Length: 196
Image (cartoon, helix red, strand yellow):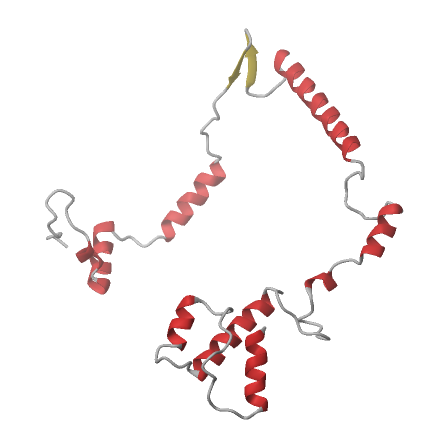
């Protein structure tokens, strides 16, 4: 980044004031407006904005630090091309799918065809639970709404743990703390609520 080089030269020359022209391509429009608010660039704001941009670019791996283990280029995390080619030729990439796309598609098509035929056979012969085929129409039985007894017992146990508070009382108490009800108004008249 040209801005980092500009800051580096300022520190090397022990200069306190920024020159009138400094690199600003890395800054947002609002940052530029703030930095040049008084006509001349504010060095402190320029440094903060530039270092914040550098931090963000390091995090996103747009820039890196040579020799760093944590801030190295993204392609160093990837497998080298020669290693990739060697593993591909030996069929040891371990991708979990076939290397040949057409063979993989043919296999998937065959599996889907088998599964659809099996589904059609089961539907025709009434072997699907809750589903039947009548005169070319698929009829699905609605799910039952039966709740297991264990779930009912758990619901009763949890309900006993709730505090016995009426909703209007709870809303009134929250309104006393926050005043939230003052933000509501009647849809038709626009009046504020009177009875809270």
